[in-house]
Length: 123
Image 1 (cartoon, rainbow, N blue to C red):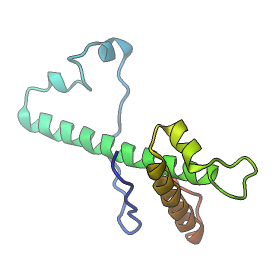
Image 2: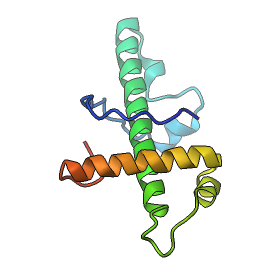
Image 3: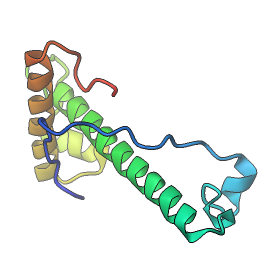
């Protein structure tokens, strides 16, 4: 799993929206966001690039939310706090990775507090 990389000074890009596919289309292994129906290679490259960027941005945002949740669960002020080993088990991470995610989450929370906004605000 890739290590979390804080990007505080980079602007967030708004990727193409992901449209959920109908159940019938999702069941077809050859069907993927209707890309197979695009004949023009320029249009196919453009739409596939939009989707790749959207999935990448979604994965980054989900990882940030994971980090914030890990930091909150490990908060020593919580009476029910979890150890990094407990967090690792729940998230199917290694304990070392859980420790890094807790620290990354704390950094995100500190950055949010310093900027006067809620932690990991939706863009």
